Image (cartoon, rainbow, N blue to C red; front, side, top):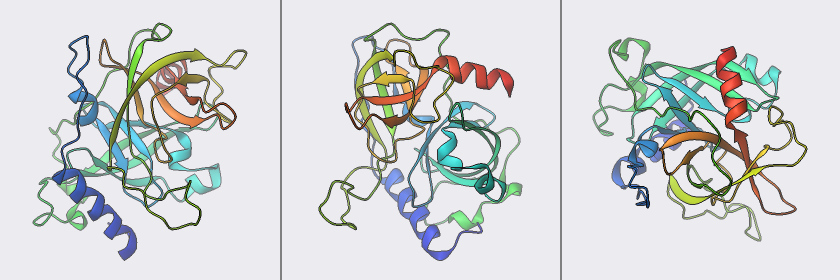
Length: 255
């Protein structure tokens, strides 16, 4: 994998937990089956947590740009990432587009684990040769239009393992590797350009999130379609922020 011993252990631990524990999916009034949202969600395998979502069956992944690299210099030497689907399937993906102003990045899966049994198929067995050309990955499609104000949403994200509210560093949280939360769409920040999410996301929502949720899909409950990515939060008001559908569609149109 090219990962050092420490990071390989983290990858294996995350994979094992994803395989062993069922992720509860809330039942919603619309009757929409939201299990597809969980199936299409990935977590970054490195210690610094992050979330992503597959948006095409051929293995195209969408996330926040700051989950891939904080700046252009870091991106130069760090385009390859290891991620894990909620099923436990390990994939390697290459960053093919990076837009820090919109806070969006696009990755393409270049290698995937054929077999998902943790013991018999350790992650170091993943290589480009293991990608089956006909393989299709679980994915979400984005909505045609932004949701109505206060439309119910779900967010599927990867909470960080360290308790940032603890009185001293090093205290661990007890969160699952993937967490599903519910909330509503709260509109867009007044006066903010929806294409500019560099400092803080323009979209507002109130789904529960934690450090590590960056890149987590925000999905309209009524349709099961992607309407944004969680990216940040306003530490003055507690409002969760994200990258909205207009920015996502413009980014995908360009790439």
